[in-house]
Image 1 (cartoon, one colour):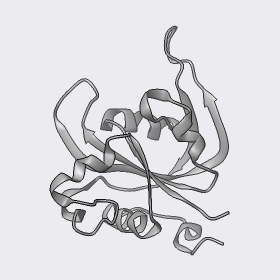
Image 2: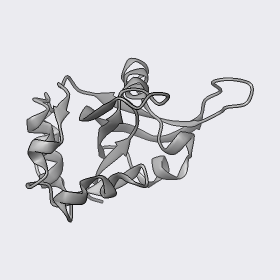
Image 3: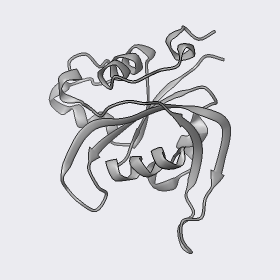
Image 4: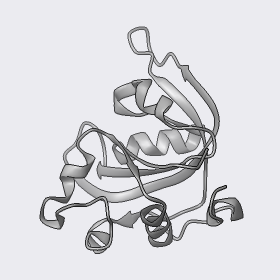
Length: 150
């Protein structure tokens, strides 16, 4: 089976929590988006805002990594919130603005309405788009991600 590439959408503050803990959590803790991914798949986070509670725009790609295994598991955050998570090996990278890439990303159908692509919180992208964003982020990818998957 070939490797797939994904974008997850989350506020930058939530992405930073995942980076610190080595996990991804998508779509307000739903399991289904995480189950679409497989071990070895690439994941990039896009952050439309800095914090979930705020409105200050971020509009940057904020993390990049790879699914470590096929485990999707519940994690109790509070008495009334138990989101699903997936283990991710995040790589060193810098935040990268989306606007300079809009005309090059193939998953953006209309650069004038680029935000539309992110509306569901999780989307599959092609390998070329993944590598383009990784370069913009100055990400340190492992050699296995640079090779064409088997």
